[in-house]
Length: 236
Image (cartoon, rainbow, N blue to C red; front, side):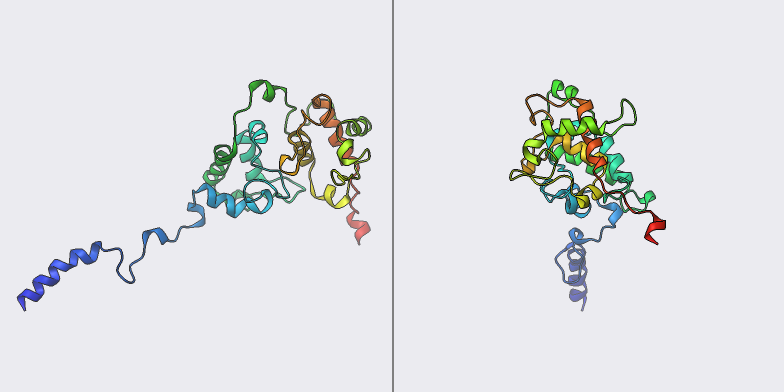
């Protein structure tokens, strides 16, 4: 009897230390609360890939794997967009205090992770020469009439002089498209392009790079092509 007790006492430490016993939880499979997830791949897959693409490209929204975009959009800018969303678009606010599901730490992990995963150094000269990425209320407003002329000069060879598309690229004035994208999205695509879809950036769309005011004018012209939404009184 004593020998059996001694044997059991000797086996107890082995039982406590053995992770492979039936019914013992594997620490690797421990449940993690959504607010405790800190892995960039998991956060990006769950919150960003549906619109921006699994590899940061070929999605309906801005390709986040574009090195030029990441060079011009600071992590603070990306955090702001992620935290508060973009009004009038399908980009929601992800911050918990704004009704989303992400903590400030998780938003920062995503913003930093984009640059770590897909960013590439760009020359200071190129970054300094780029038109400002963010839509601003400062400076001269965009002029749609001038924008129509600039569009024909820089964008017409692919999208057609009126933006209705050619064999090279589709229409960019379709009401459903313009109804879904914000002026910020139009400006970002005009500057950054869509390399994943074969669209060059502001430096390569014409005989010379686009100037900042030309970008602003083109966005103003595109925005003017939107079909006005019916007022609530008309809808009723």
